[in-house]
Image 1 (cartoon, rainbow, N blue to C red):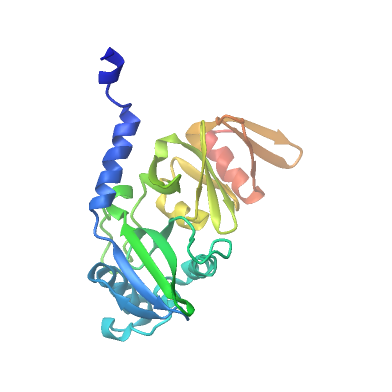
Image 2 (tube, rainbow, N blue to C red; image 1 turned 90 degrees about the horizontal axis):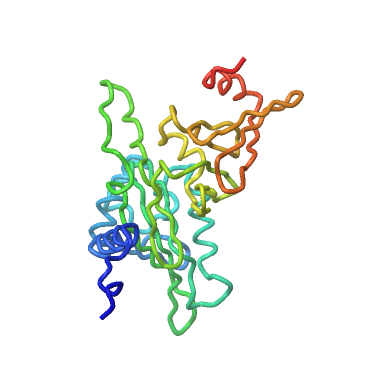
Length: 267
């Protein structure tokens, strides 16, 4: 046997395998929806997570959740995203296909869920939807910080971001991220040598990122200030050149230009 055949897998591969193994050990939350998107049944994991969400956002007791529109269990800013996911579940019109899992930010309670939606069919056609999710909160965020009495608990801060690629869940470390670019329901995450698609919004990300490192410089862009390599001023416009593979040029809005210049110590 050749010596190379005894070699250990790369560290990144071993870490990915470990995470995949951990993911397989999770107890998934399962929600069954009827053809109109109303909740028909929960498993115990889903009830533990979504039950408090219903009580806090709707004032609805857990035993009153059956028959409710599942979209109403989510914060208002997450509802359009969930509707989009539910409406696109048929994946090209084929009843046996469904889109890949996507990350959903659930703020009540403060969770990050990896969500899978599958259309269910019986002999008469589509009869409902099965939603399966994994709670990745503890794998991706710092523990909640204490808040002053009478003030809302601040969101848990991210240290990794979950994305789905080639049938695998990948956790991207924040130190590897150069910038985020928003586009509709999705956000492109740019590292020095790759790009990933996430459906966590820029608004959600901005609340959960370290503001001393990540700055929202434009309505469509958040950048890592550590990865900014040049500030370019031309007439009334300001742009940042970023240290990714393309040396991307990111526009800075007028409202953020003064803050950025102050942070960088530029007159």
